[in-house]
Length: 385
Image (cartoon, rainbow, N blue to C red; front, side):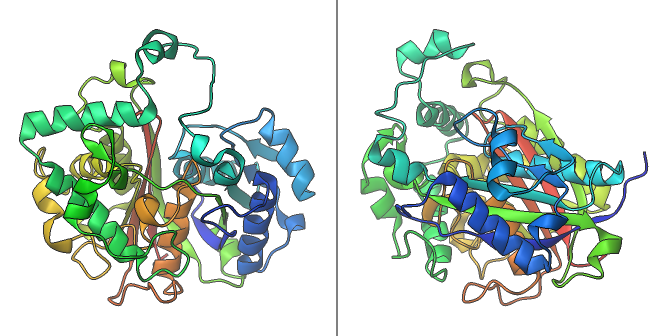
């Protein structure tokens, strides 16, 4: 099947941050309305819907009813945090196949309003599948990432101070974003003196817990020419999978799905990783960033700790990364992949506002990570057709 060139023609955010007092469905609606307005389209134009939720069943039925639309194509695949990068791949394929013309990718979660401080600690969910064998022993999500961090640090000699550099840089990026949940500067010492959550990960090594929603509108590049917003072209998109639980990961020091997905996405785009001007990666924990940088081929195994030194990932660094402050400081409403796409589009269109990167940007790579370092999806974007 020939691939139809596609472009992102609208992005939108709902209110996000601490308790918004809104339901998850309302956050979906607000983000979708903003994205469609950005594109100069209406809900009536949407014939493809791509969305999933952390909790709740039959999301693909409930959300269209709430939005007041009757799409002819619905995808509610859930791969965790990187789902929305995979949805870009799915949406472009659906448009190429003639299954839809205007694809709405949307997410909303009121997890902080609904669960507050109980999230991840007070909730009791029956374990199934492989989790039924390890969850009684206390392996949580943060515990799984901590295991990967322990192994990585032991194998390569990377230090907690080097992990902390990621959190410090993300907070510095967030300082320019008025919407970021945390904006006050922090130091490496602040990270290391924050409460230990799961050794070696401290509280400031972990993503924030917020409400929030975001939406992206995709259509063919041909139709994009007639719409309101500057199109950002999808040059490549790919996904890869490895395992479900961390106990089945072949090598906790190597994020193989990110390597496979990004290699394919870059190949589709006809680019090398050195051609990327802007990076948006999943930063659920500081270790996630180090593993991702190495998987993308930006540095060799064990070298990411040195790579992030000196503010390289800062908005004014040589590789601006998570320029809104990322999940470590700006927002993380359960699954954050759609915010990577939105931030990349805002930066490439030069409409980010006070946190706009000053130097010219042509290309961006977004890499979402889901599960326990389980699945990754990569998208290459460009302002050039």
